[in-house]
Amino acid sequence: MSIAQNLTNIRETLPEEIKLVAVSKTKPIKDLQEAYNAGQRIFGENKIQEMAHKWEILPKDIQWHMIGHVQTNKVKYMAAFVSLIHGVDSFKLLKEINKQAIKHNRTINCLLQIHIAEETTKFGLNAKELAVLINSEEFATLKNVQIVGLMGMATLTDNKEQIKREFKHLKTLFNTTKETLPEITILSMGMSGDYKVAIEEGSTMVRIGSSIFGSRNYH
Ligand SMILES: *Cc1c(COP(=O)(O)O)cnc(C)c1O
View 1 (cartoon, rainbow, N blue to C red):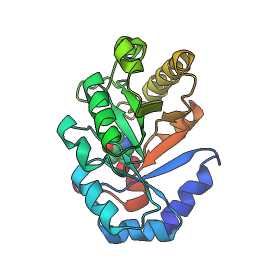
View 2: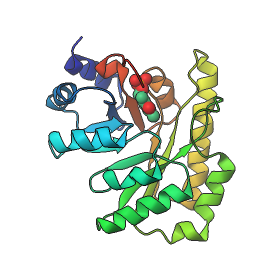
View 3: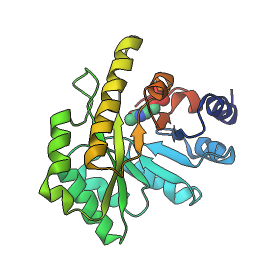
View 4: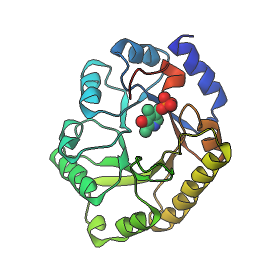
């Protein structure tokens, strides 16, 4: 099926208020252009230089989301244009994003990534680290970053109950975080294989790659 057709099919299953991030990592410009022509405006990438390259070439009304792990020394390559950074999981990184945002005289929107999966390889804060970060005095001094929500990835498993439990946990943390940061509105959870469960559990933003663009050869 075509990219445009895949997009139509997915949009039909999404409640209207759910934001769709089309995860285009590793995919060629022509695939992104096809999705753009079908009306898609939010794209997710996991490598900063690849995203910057695509940003240079493609139309400027695209919102670019960085969904991958961010190395502090690479923030500068996306600070001018990135629309949302999903994977913020340390104060050090947040401080660097703030610094680069100041250089560009803008505010950069960020999600704090929470570790909800049982795999140890996935990045993210645990509940305690999250609480420490958002309650720290230093956090309050960062004026050019805006935390707009939380993000998480469930374990890659066929066990629906486990995935559901992990998303529930993230939703609970979202609710408690909202007591400290009432302005947060985004809960980024759900990918091709688990976005329906994620929406049932309160996701407001899904990140879908392979169901739109087809499978990837590498991650
Ligand atoms: C690759 C990726 C996705 C999309 O995965 P699909 O299974 O292809 O939909 C979503 N979120 C993150 C963080 C990713 O790295």
